Length: 180
Image 1 (cartoon, one colour):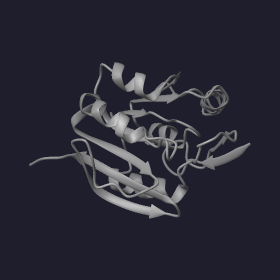
Image 2 (tube, rainbow, N blue to C red):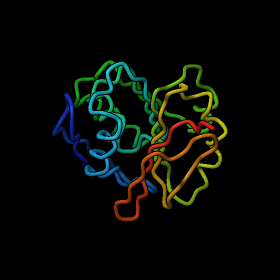
Image 3 (cartoon, rainbow, N blue to C red):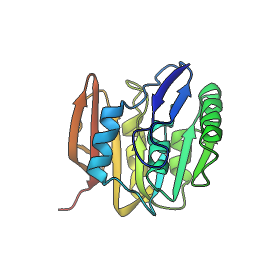
Image 4 (cartoon, rainbow, N blue to C red):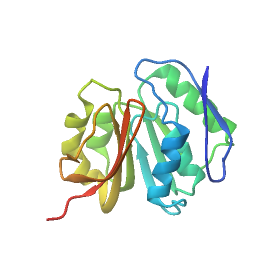
């Protein structure tokens, strides 16, 4: 089993364990620290969607920092089982909901708008262009989109990159709704 630690908030220093799985790349500690510096350290009252939950590092980090709701979507049964084990390890925080599902179907069927969506899909599979048309209705007007990709992105549908960083082969971005 692989592991990653939560870097801030209520669950700080807790270790999440997850299996090897094709395309699974947990967001490094340093990148998560940067992301939550960009967002503000506390996410009190936020509703977050982690579409490719994987190790759970982003979703559990958001819950650790006070998010009211974190919906984690994962399609791999083995990875999903590890997410449930990590949820148990953290004493089943009520703010976290874990579901098995396809990212496209989930995004197409959301009825509530989120404050923040985490998009860290497997690389080189064309996920971002397929998800882009569905983002508008899934995010609140002042919502944010966090995207990890194998390349730098300036915009995605009606969203523009406001912050960007690179760690190894990972380009990470914070996007906000474009205003003209």
